[in-house]
Amino acid sequence: MAAAEPLRYCSDALPARVDDVTNCFRWRAMRALALCRWLRGGTVRALRLGAAAASSAPPPQDGVTVEVLDHLERLALVDFRDAEGVERLREAVRFAERLREVNTEGIEPMDSVLEDRCLYLREDDVTEGKCTAELLKNAREKVEEYFVAPPGNIPLPELEERDTFLKGS
Amino acid sequence: PSAQVLNRRCVEAAVMTGLALNCTINKKSLFDRKHYFYADLPAGYQITQQRVPIAVNGSLSYSLCVDNKMSQMVTKTVRIKQIQLEQDSGKSLHDDARSQTLVDLNRAGVGLMEVVMEPDMCCGEEAAAAVRELQLILQTLGSSQAIMAEGQLRVDANISVHHPGEPYGVRTEVKNINSMRFLAKAVDYEIQRQIKELENGGTVLNETRAFDSKLGCTVPMRDKEGKQDYRFMPEPNLPPLILYDAKSLPANVNHQQVVNIDWIHERLPDLPSVKRAKLVELYGILPEHSFTLVNEDGLTEFFEDVVKQTQMKPKKVIGWILSDLLSHLKQHSLTAKESPISSFLLADLLNLLENGDISSSAAKQVFEELWKGEGKTPLEIVKEKQLELIKDQEELEQICQAVIDEREKEVMAIKEGNEKVINKLIGLVRKATRGRANPLLVKQILEKKLSE
Image 1 (tube, helix red, strand yellow):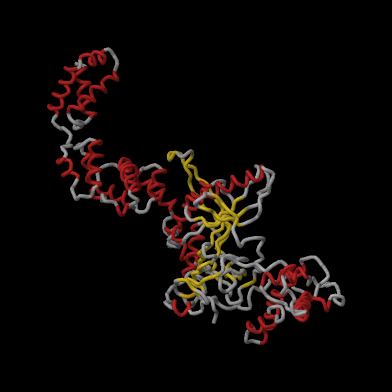
Image 2: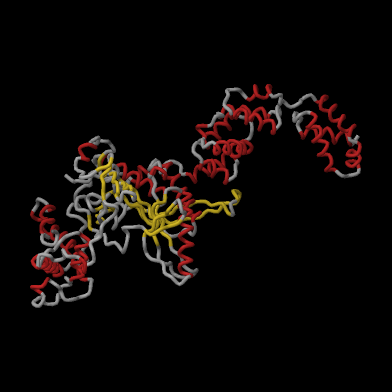
């Protein structure tokens, strides 16, 4: 779940040199800020966390509202599952918010930790293919050489009808 | 090592196209991920260039016939907002009968070039003409074969209406347009639909609609409800794309890894507009003729081959190419390269005509015979059907005299000043010679005789 592990992305992309830590930080900042800005939108409403936690949950001041959780679940098809999952999300938001303490005025945003590397261009040669049978092995259902899918996206039911929302609470 | 690797040809094609469309090429462009879920997008995201694309701010000039008259053409321009490189998704085939979608992933991940135009066009005809010109340019550059029927060129139209002087209205996006003709139809239908909706007090929704070619209308598209949040983020696996020019080219580089904008610029072929201008200048044909020549696959080559092999002036040859040849080709859905009459045979025929050996009506008859493709030469057909013009002056004079002698009434009328009646006499001579007399010569002889 992306919300629970914001650190994972950065360590994958972390360059070998120690003095690139600042660069990594700037990159994380950018991603996290995007997440923050995004969570800020949306009206503040009391958070419903299932029968047990209802009375004790304070109204959220960090913008992590029921609508936001619903929207995230719908967009990213994640399942926050329970109060613990939501709390991890909140922690992630709090963590990212701290980046605002850094003064980045007049500094060009970093596009990529790979900005000093060359984008490799490959020649227009066919180097692989003819593996239809092997690829189709992955299909649960197929028709001739097509993968079979439902007729369209099946959207998540509306919040009121959804029995999986924060099911684990 | 990165999962996605950019193909150099894609970059070159995008630069070529950007230059041909007068764009500013961004020496540094970036890649982003566009997230959404769909069966034909296994990764759940598409790599695109949302923040800084490879080319921006260009223009495309195209021409339209005014009032459907080929003789009056106007030039219009549509601004190009940007060109971006992105990945293709797979292809979905909807099987409504069995309530399923079949997905073909062969083209998933293949490089695409998206050309975004500003809303400078005002009707279906303009949209089709602009796209047609773009198609010709892409084909000339070799960026793409751009055949719509094979999905090599796909067009999504964005349409809105507004009262003059007011801001642009809400736009709808129309997909599933598979040909130029359907593009024009879809645009015009949607314009009318929106106007009707607004005039009835309704509103236009910012939605995606599909063009139904059977019904000739647009319908709301399933799966596209509500505004999409694509959660754009920089593509973590791809560094920025850096392009160079002669000035910025670093020394000691691996040329295979470097794309030089100036190098590509120098090697751009003549664009359709340049080709047309050259044809007009070189051969003295009309601009609208040049449009048809360039528009039809292989026709320019055919025309130039005929011109090389005949004494007939290009201005006269063009008539034969554009009316006789082209109409026959169209009727049989053939390209110029597939013509049963070769440029050599046509030139041969036109030489007979030019030398005064046959009349133009006889020439048309020979053309029809040649079209059958039976291997006969024009001369053989002329002899077979006895179509040669009578060249013997005396014979002609005798026939003319005979007609004059027969038609006292008409002769009197002409002598009294009714000059148009001479055409009747010319017609009679033509009948008597079975079309084998040059009408101009006949007129000369008759006039001479009548003035004696």
